[in-house]
Image (cartoon, rainbow, N blue to C red):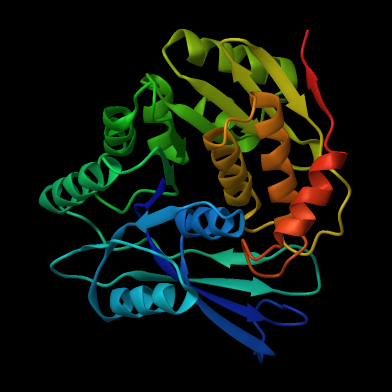
Length: 313
């Protein structure tokens, strides 16, 4: 079983507006509500790949109950941690015909130390059933940046890989102490967290950073490069994968779908290069859809044959 953890869960409200103009009144042509957050997208993608997956995250209030109901309606298996007060956030995604999706993220319900401790205990209990664990997304307000990676590290074993996909201060804390973690990050997030935002963060630079993280104890470092594919830095070597050509509709959820593909493939015993290719195919398939992690498995199986993976000398 794969356990997915969304520490800052949300209701995703997706609107389609043909043409978005700042300062104007718009009338959406469609509205879609769903249980959201990066971990929920990982969950959806894993389900498409026919993987046994359980989702969790802290929920609160009327919005939290709505989110739980939305997950049930979609067939998502979940074991939520209920907070004593507050409201689960709502995020708005605007699909339009001018390019990629515009995303408006609310900050989330602040958690006290006691709230986080209760959630961490809940996660530790669920992880006992899991063969792999994936932490995805941001931290709620007021939670210490190091709390997420500390919880992730406590669950990582040689037999149970723990993936961590986060950003900003939480990512910086993870990079400082990555012991046992499988880090998944995109190029821009890594550059910012490494203190080199705005710098030409080349492939060679990414490999060097990845190798430093392995020296500090990371189990695996995977960096997605957008249209240029992804890099996997491992103790056995470095692999780079390209991206098959697809018609991009929205990239929202492509990183989450990539992570799901990678994690599921490794659970099934794929080599790292084959798992990297499978993740790339999932991310590319996701980019062809308006809603995140709603691609078809058949497309993944077709696209994976077009992914070129090479070992870096």
